[in-house]
Length: 154
Image 1 (cartoon, rainbow, N blue to C red):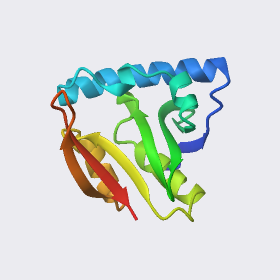
Image 2 (tube, one colour):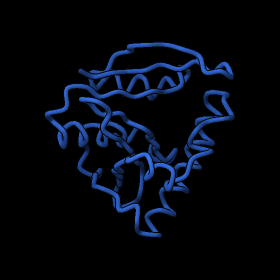
Image 3 (cartoon, rainbow, N blue to C red):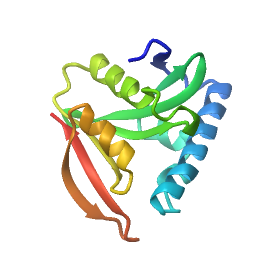
Image 4 (cartoon, rainbow, N blue to C red):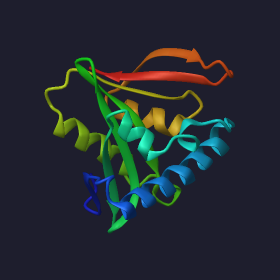
């Protein structure tokens, strides 16, 4: 983790935190839609209230004191599922995603398995996960034809 990146739990009950995370999710969803060509992405449709209802825990990453990214996860069987990851386009390639995932893995060292799904066209995300020891476990297409991959770290 670079020295300018800090990671902490997010208080999604705080209105200003919620607003900042929603804005980040929206911005990143639009950017991912541009990169992958998929305009019907879950981050553009879900809310933090939905996420809280699914039992997700949120981490935020700051770069030089500014909100740069977020990750949410939940327990799933004996492991964890990364539910959403969003990195501000201004902070891509600053180590934010790696810092968030590293923090999660250090925070939950006893967890035997971490899963994450992403669009198969999202090469930067897949590369980041692979650098951290994840591998592609499964490929499939959504009903609307979006190619997806599941990556796991065991």
